[in-house]
Length: 207
Image (cartoon, rainbow, N blue to C red; front, side):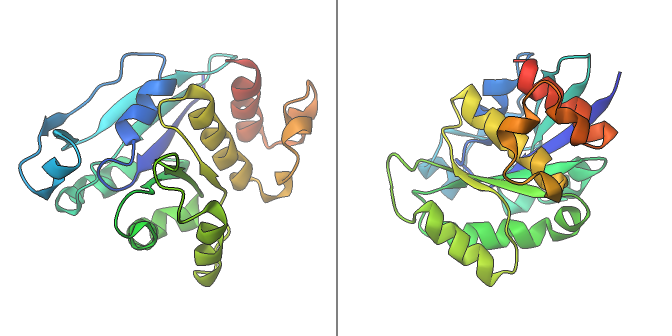
């Protein structure tokens, strides 16, 4: 049985804990504590160590889901949590004062990990704040010289979070871009490397 690890990161309140809870097949493990600084203006409790869940795929594979603390003062946990990971999902809150700065900060903070693996970006709260748009995020990312997948997501919706996980797996195999339907067809997964093949098959058929 193969086991893999994906890390969720982003600023406080972006939806990391909620996203993991929406797709985890076990009750997520949380390490929340009452917010005692400026964080309490956005949420009553905040993650201080990690969130953890498990996504069971068809064929017995498992994806372990780890959520990092959003506050920079807990950044010592970030290096610990990414160890052994296959990719990063960055969640951004579109209602924050400067989501582009948040994006740049986390992309830089996790740069060494991203270079070795890949990243997919989900923008939450777009129903509350429609600006900046997804097109605006793409333009900002172009100035940084990277082209990761970017989606508007609701962290409470299982299909939205599943789409992010799938897009991360696609980005790990650049030749798969634009072939979502064929990849989820019965024999489409044959074009994947052995590791990605089993993971994608589980995501396409395991839900």
